[in-house]
Image (cartoon, rainbow, N blue to C red; front, side):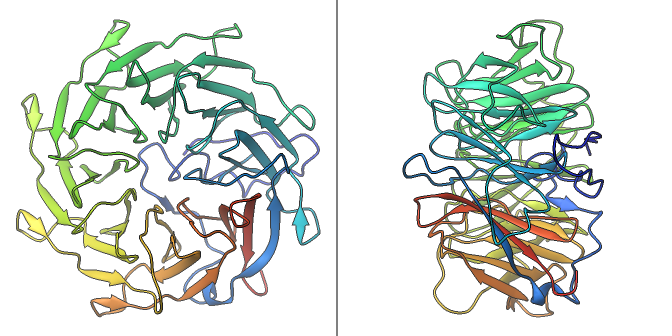
Length: 418
């Protein structure tokens, strides 16, 4: 995982808050925090709301898909009104906290920011959108970018590996864009190279083993050399055939396999090394029955993903010996449910996921010995649609959302006695 060594200006140094610098935690997007030890199976049921971070009131605002990231003693996420919000990770001593700093951008933010060393990356949507780099420590109350690039970025979140930041574009020139994470010494930077795709890219890249995996809306997952190809434009080294588009769903790489959902309700599982040809078929598929935009988390031999019926669907990462596998078990909350487009994350034996039924849930990651498992904990938020990915880090659970779609909010939970 990417280290973030310096503390924020005016904020206390917090070495515990360095483990979740980008969407789903690491470059491979496993959705696993292996360093969490404070909250687990024994005390997750005692999680309670500690404080709420209230976004700046600049008119009605909400959070759509932008999940928290944690680093430099701060928590960051973006909003529909184009705000980049930075809150002190430890709170402000009150039940309601204001941002330490923010940036006001002219287009909506539907992706998760990413932290690399002293820099925060985030993209904005619309044809006039840009890809921005900010000083992560802030610059005062309202900040301007260090550099930017003209690039329409929808739900694709930036990923950083080996000093290169990768992001997908769903604009007029779609593709995978690779920038020097240290910038170019100018206010406007050009990409190091662009990976050509035949359709818009809204999925977040995953980087592992020298390759970058990213899915498109043409029904294929494209795989590029992470170092590029020695040219300004690069073609995929191989493609994985999904059979249906990917929109917000993104790949995760673990133990030599790539897990990529598609909009036909399938979890497509590929050999991360490819098949020796230009186009590869999945090793096996998981049946999710219907569409969805959740991205999988992979931990301890299980694959976790949101289900369109409002459940958490869980598969064995090795499959079932058949071409199509059914979930091994479901996390099924009682009462009314709604589609789960939130991407689950796993920490210390617990899997967390949001819901479009205004709730956040925690389940035992190893299951309960039955095909249907009840949550260990749940919380009703003021946000009708929680489709961001929760983050458990340093004994604190962070969930980005809104107050009935009017004020962007950060919900922050701690367990009793921690």
